[in-house]
Length: 156
Length: 156
Image 1 (cartoon, rainbow over the protein chains, first blue to last red):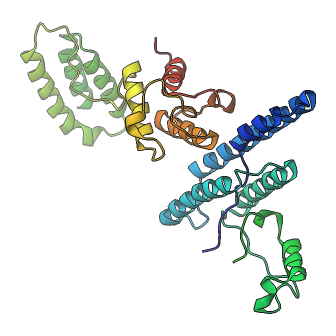
Image 2: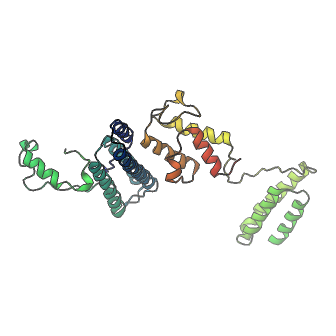
Image 3: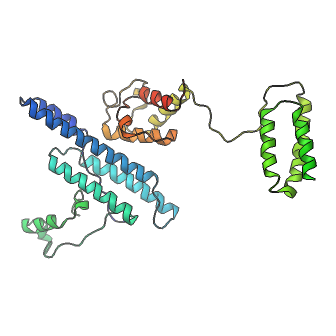
């Protein structure tokens, strides 16, 4: 069974970030920033809701009942874990990346009727020896070769 | 043969005003053209049973509904509240002792916005109709949910 579904993104950290922002003195800048963050937060929540709605009416490709059930529970579980995992992100770029990851996985899942993410090969010279896990060039290569829909997954 | 039975049944039904009876007759009448032969024996049995029933309650103009039509139990604000509480108690992140009608999800029960989305999805599943995003983000305590459902289902 392949690894998870990705469902990144934050939510409640918005409250923390807005509080921190307000504690500084640049009010106008803060105001526009909080509006953007609020909008991003709403987008995140609507993505979360969309995933749950997909899971509600999901039918497996094999049309077997136990497959359908396991895939539905997989989708929901994956969404929960990945959203929680990325809840604390604060930079807009990383949040946007997570939103892209989420959208990519939704589209791929709906298109191929398969909620599990497609695994990819290691890049050439990406993990030459066991020591390669720590060496920076190889780490950089692996990070660069990671597709957008696997960004939240760890390297295991 | 079928028409004779039909006439006899209708004559028997006209003696007492009986909405359930009439409906059943109407249903029987619809079925009769389709499966006359198979239905005759059952119709005879039913007619006798009904005549027995009419004899038992001759002057009874009240509706004695002895046939259950497939319909949901009637919705009252109390039943909605019970169902909402039932669903919330099943959610594992909520402490059932702390649950009150006016307990705010985020301030009193310590949930975050992702949990609130999950709760609203659970309510959608329970009551069988979709709640749009704009409305869903305003539902912050069980009281709000009960009011919203009552509004949507046109009760009081």
